[in-house]
Length: 262
Length: 283
Image: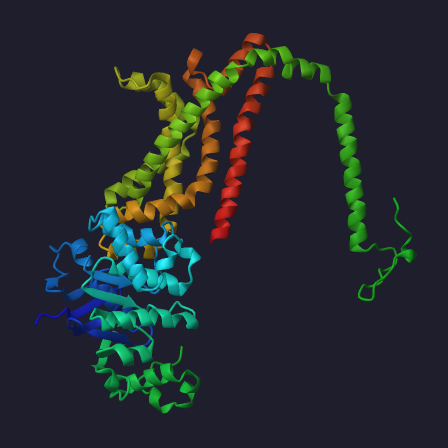
């Protein structure tokens, strides 16, 4: 069976800084894969290489059987099948919520006005912001904005959804709404690649968890293994810091592989 | 002065007792303010006495001369000034947008062309541009600017304003967060579609206040069209005032024309200020 996403020997450098140092991994259809790791480990860059918002320096990215890194590929056409949700929402502030969800359907998929509006309302209802159709994004809370962003991506009927730390810019009490939308999506069988710091979400929803550090994949596997019983010292240190931030300094021994404190 | 002697000055618990012969800062400020007002009144009185009001009135505010300016100052001169300015503004905005996009393009020759154009025409006086247009037929025999005098005037203002608009619009385009075009591209929009639907509309909103000020300065620059030496139905405000002042040997038309400019520029300046404030609030 073809993989939904297949990444081979992926390298990415920004100038002299090598952010990704040879990544190999796959996502199967219908799978939810969560990528975790400390900031600066290259998780977001990896995600942005999957829809070519960043041009890989070396390596192959294949999505749905199409090799995106092939220079002959129509990247706009390929991106239509990939939904992307950003940390900072990136809704279009000069359009209403409804227009935000309709614009790409109209201009990219060339759907008629009525159909685009129907699809938009359907998806906005699905994420629970159907009542906000005529509002402008700045009038909404962060949680509502992020759910509109999810609806905007879903309206394009993507085969794969990419989430780049979708809850990191939210107030803590708004995180739950967004996560429950994502949980529902996963249950409906959407293929998802999620960069996140929400360990309980990863543990509950992910089929597979990938731990990255320093531009390489350190460890991957089922969530109960990677989060519940990590094999590598680096994974253990990271999880300890994330799951119990107040006591991370008590334990000096597990910081073996970590760079000295900044 | 109503100042009390030092000893009567009340001293608060936190205030220091002023030293002998020294005034408190607040008191010193009050005295200085008083002196300034007194001087100002003196200057106004002296100027009012020395001014030849009758002569001034005869030359700058003669009612029957002012009446001669009506209604042409509005129906012909102001109308033409607005035609020149709006024409220059519309074509200048389009040209400016094109130059701004060229300047931000990844195609190097586009960037060069735009940079050279902007640097040259921002650096030249507007008057020089009009003189050049006047000599165009000499340089290119048989060439005529379409639209006659209107065309020439609008061409001159377009050349000047497109250079300025290009820089304003470039700043506006760069002020749109990068995430906006990334979001558009990840929805499958092409680069140009993302520009048209997402980036440019936001950039235009950002540059509306500075652009209003640019419109005002363009309106004033339109006075330089008088050097094109047009006549009759094509005159704009300054030329109109100047001509009428010559025929009547009286400066009143200049004053009338000046007031007509202010009639347009002051509300526009006020509008620009309001737009700027509103935008600052939205951020």
